[in-house]
Length: 490
Image 1 (cartoon, rainbow, N blue to C red):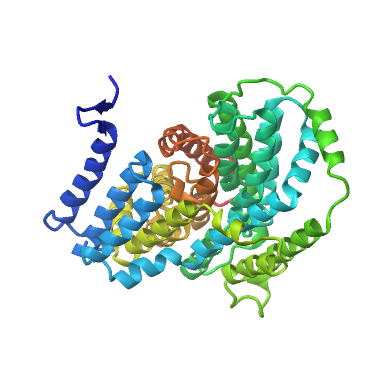
Image 2: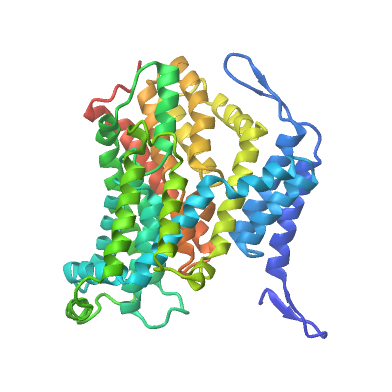
């Protein structure tokens, strides 16, 4: 029976939508208005009270998660409602809740999307896509692999958000050679765009340039352990895991989203002809590419150059946005074409992420969870910590997930004889790959703009992908890293 029923007044009643709207509201009411919950107690005996504001943050978090997954209203509208609930139920002041919806990280995503528009408008996207297709050929399996390898490789030298914004228009061009019908989703389309999002995460764990989470984790490590993990040490241990996940994800998408066509006959020749027809590179392409390259270069060297270090990366990337309009590569129509639904989605994610952090709700969850494993086998403890980080990073900023869980884990670890390196590196692996929710990472939301999949589909296929991630993490912890010389036990 259909979930949608027509009644005599002529209105359509979508019972499925009403059900999940109601579930979200009921979860909010039950959690927010429930009696006080027990304190969390860490291994040293310190108590952590779950305040009414923290309980309210959990309530908003549950409502938002339910509405985001089942898309009962536009995802950007859900984000706005999460800010409203914080203000109306006095969880946090309205100024704080809404101000954080335009946190510099959200502005960074906006500027990254603008770069994607520039790539498309100038023709750089088509030029790159045709060159790549001429190399990988006509097999759709190889097109998957080519796109995934390029995505993962780029995240070693630039932020995964910027990589996703760069790859997105390129994938649209590739998909346009597969089918003319952009309105009807296909298995190939789903695999191409969800795969780009997943692989951007896998590649971003390899170096400190892929995302900010690495620098945060290494900062906690230095503070609590007293020694440094260098850029090259991180890359040494993370490189095999990032690339194992990249190729494992290729197999994953070939299994779950096997393309309807094994080949696209004549694609290589068509790509070569289209590339030739574009002629020489244009002045606008050169200018746009130069601005983007300089912007990415400055963001990459910023942590290591004293004069650049105080400047937020959002200010650097926004400078490129302004320049694109100053030199008239972009105009007002381009500004109006930006997917504000995606911007609002991430605004809500930042707001509730900060809310869980600042009210102490996330810390309460972390201490309760990790304390359950303080007397367990070392491997069970490391994997339980990794699981918690993986789940949290799907709902809040991965930087926040690391900041909440890692200090607690590094304190509990010595009681079990677990070395700090394996705790830190395993946390970083899972923090980079939130496969369940769009809000887990900017590449997820950018991929959603393709309209090839729903939030429910993303969540559904994210479950087996997350299981695969935990298996690979377990193999890294138990086999790969010890063989590479990592000290697992104290």
